[in-house]
Image (cartoon, rainbow, N blue to C red; front, side):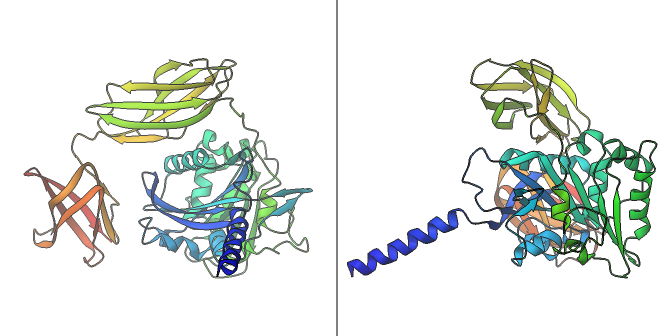
Length: 447
């Protein structure tokens, strides 16, 4: 038996060794990366853990409206289209060769609870960049329908956000045409390859024509010019866009055989700041916000500007902490007067030469009118109620607009309680939660 047992152990070690370098695609449910995303799928390339200093291109694929969900039981909805579909079906290449160089992508497919606005997307990107080995010069955005529209909005509504992106590939992008977006994308020289079906009766192809044409018609046209591929089809989903042999015969005027090789022809030039941020956390201390962070390798660092925002888009400096001037440091800052709403915080790390970089974003809710964060609203399948309180047999009721009891239960959870409401008819409701004999009511809509 001993030789056989040793044989099995050797086989096991070989399997473990081979898998250590293998690519992986896994669900990350119940991970809050921004206020409206509680889960995502993660694709890591072969050899991701082999070299601690190696960075990888990042592709973020954003789903359509039909794939909105809670980030847990709904998470597999994001696998029905685009790059996540390819990966899930074993069709995504392990690497791409572009201009004689081999590249391997990190691919992240978030699930949002509601249509995201650009501040949410930026917070999400901050989270991914701070948790993965991302080449910040090679961050790419793609998406379908709602997700395609998010590509247009994030890249063009805010110059500082758009400057983070190396290229975008929106498909059937659902975003109201905006000349300002086009002008900003042209100013950024943002590489654009957009797809649409000519007869799409969900999102008009005229929107893609508008964005591409008006970007190219800017006073100073972009380099490279924005490009579009329009197919003669009435379907909404543009499946051909992700064909790995899309441009195999050079039928389209762009470099590379597919959108992935096309993307990799472009990169941004982003300053790499010589300060490694090991951690950044925000916690409530009664009516104050305590911010704590740790660093390593503080080379030529002047210090940290603490910034606060009410919307994760417009920022105000509320303090400055000088760098310790050492190889590592532990820091803290207390916001003694947070806003009476959701407070977003980030660190602006400033070098002696004036260059800077921003940290990921953290948020704390100091809303005066509620001890609870109720989301999403409107609701489809589940209500989530977040609180710093532990829910222990907490009465919870839902009433119709006419005052009839529609549902009652007791909450038992720590941090976030989840209440299934898929069975409720569509309409307006009032939720009531009672803690320490103090009732609180929240209006919501069931879709």
